[in-house]
Length: 415
Image (cartoon, rainbow, N blue to C red; front, side):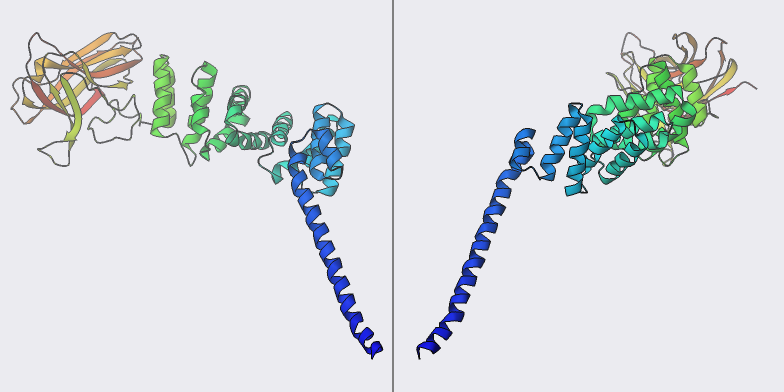
């Protein structure tokens, strides 16, 4: 009977011992896992020497040590530590970048290019790899690849925009034939830095030339300059008095179409950019708006209300009339008052502001609330490359309300 009892107890004792062993293994595993959880922040944040002592086999600690050695100029140590980190974690981008930079410092540029290209492809966020590739590809004359990596950098880092923008612009000044088409292709993708880069080209003459060339290239792309972007460029050129540049750019872009001396003379085209588009000025005593003519429901026109006392420029646009005699024609409808004595269409030279014509903005004999044609002969002198066409008030010493409509404004060479 005792033999049978001993035999039945043996499996039970073996089962208990197996359960104890499994329990010990699980406890030990939990301890190891807990230790790993505890030391990971230390490996990431502790000084490099402490991280290495805590976890000498950790890929993270080895990579941090490699980066530290590289920063200190100890190239061989950095290379050894970086390769050790890669051996333990083959897809560590930063370790790969460290090894690539050590190859570059050792003069093995082809190997460095291969390694850093791989690092850049693995991570768009590895700035040092992309920065090295920008410089290296520029030395090779490869604008496409260099600027693609620069684009990757500047999309993420606003703080380095000035340096990258200077790179684009310098290449555009020194090697426009090869570099500007590449820059235009990047801008045509509407990157988040497009507006900032175009705005950075507003000061120096050579930068403005780069911007004008880019505008011409973008005009043939899927994303030409918007009206707002083109308006801003035109306004910069106006502010600097570069009217010949404005004329050249308008002809290159055909925006607005250069075939008409007056842009949007029928007040129906809102797409043209300023300063060629009508700029309406609201002032005390003056209200100007483009409204639908009550006599022609499909016909927009310029409606002006003027108190007869205030002084103001009501509407203006830039024109490029060739020297010689021209015929100025406009249609006017008088709703109230006398626009012939209270308003005038003027032409002044740009730059300089010399007045060359003033045409009464109405016909005193015209029937009220009916359209009438007013015409005049104007002569543009030879030293007047551009002109401002303006509707201006003719203030008197007492108020005399005037309401008038204007439409179908045109200027054409005489004969």
